[in-house]
Length: 331
Image 1 (tube, one colour):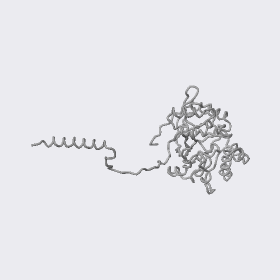
Image 2 (cartoon, rainbow, N blue to C red):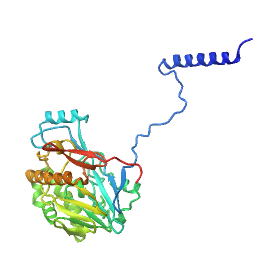
Image 3 (cartoon, rainbow, N blue to C red):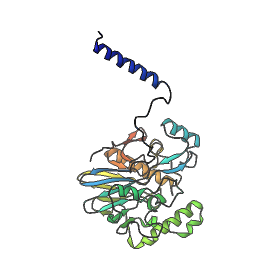
Image 4 (cartoon, helix red, strand yellow):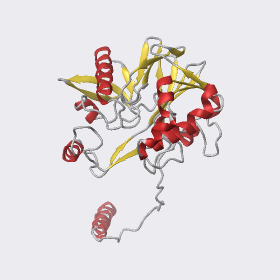
């Protein structure tokens, strides 16, 4: 008489051996469940606290700068850029940066910092213009935004003020920016400089001039709403402005575009960016801000750093290093 337990063990081993043999044959294992590829990404928003304030980073999508070349950062050759990207395990066929817009709910005001490119401008790559969809996913109604803090008047920072139909995207918002940037980028004569300036000036006029009655010109140190202070950081543009957001002793520094790349802007901070209006002034503003952030250990958000762009700047010899803040799944 056979032992039932022994037979059962032999059967199990035989079945396991057969399954292993079957698995060794490509395509021979039947699918127990079949799911289609989604081919979509989750909505891109990230929420955290600044004291009593609630902050939400909302992506406008990645922005393409194109293949590495000597035309992106002054003094960095194509070969140097490829080497830098490769050493940090980044793609070397296309330089891509993020667009991290910030929304801060102070409990009294809902403040949007910059607007991204808008859905119609594709000169900066096919994946921009995601702000409105991600705002909706984050539960933020554009009609509830009552203040827009513009760091500067470049396409990826203010070209979503107006819709393609010529209506205000944020109909109840007061807009804060420097007069220097407004005057510079609405000057029709500058459109004749080159094709890039033509795109800059044309788009700025389309988005800023219809909102002139909503624009409040700001100066260095002005508190646009309680807890949000403008800090002039010129160079990238003539009136480029960063913002310090403070509540209950906690702060977040919105850098705007004093830095563009998490490696080059920190490891080589004295190199101007090709789109700077005044490269050396831009370097001076970056070094001053980075020294402040490093010495005070103040949290920052960088518009173009890897999503969601929140972290800290630390000293690294005569340069700096960006330390991303952990992305928490709870507030």
